[in-house]
Image (cartoon, rainbow, N blue to C red; front, top):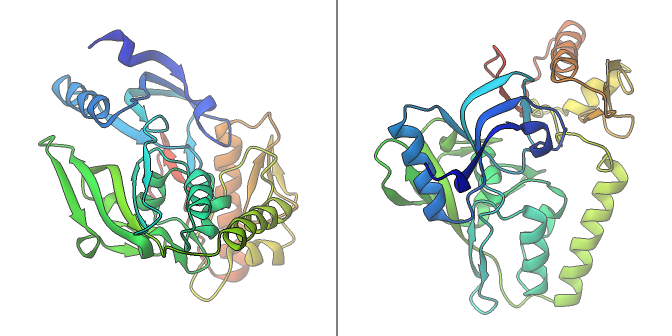
Length: 297
């Protein structure tokens, strides 16, 4: 394959928001759907394992050699907004804060909540990311994908996608998300939308440790409960393993004090799970994806 498309032996810690990660055998940042498609074909033709990362915000990559190809979508960031109809087309690498701010500036309402989520559109659809009971699934019309086996491009309607809490059928269906069509309510009050979006971001940065490397939320909220409250009840705020620490601002955040290894973070996650299970009888499921660990969540 043309060398300009990828680098070899790339350190992935620069591509995750928690700033740890191993070394990828091959690493690529396609700038277009064509390049993305080409990379997947190359990987399949050469029997290389491959995986996609977006903004790396919900991702713990073990500090080992990761065989195969890692594709980062962050440079696939074309975004088209029609302010009159409210229709939006966006590639998988568009960052949610960018989307949220652009919607507000175009008078479209319904995306103000997404400003504080440090992920990409593709990642948000894959994970069904959200806050409270809000998620992008509500505004989704369809998703363009590449079938990983046949390489054909398909458009899948929302009704054919299964969305549940922090889950979408893309987690199991062998389709790679390349772009999405969405619809938001047009003709909103511009000043109000921009102000609400700013306030949402301010609230996030005041209550969550966005100034330090973290994942965003670590655990899914159990039914009728909050992961942060369960961790808080056990007095675990500030609990550390190595350079990994449970944030004193928000207990469902783990921060990297710039010296954490992936093992420190992994051990802290499992330690929280054990403590909450012992004391509260509740198993906390991580919403963080683990790569390169003997762990299936």
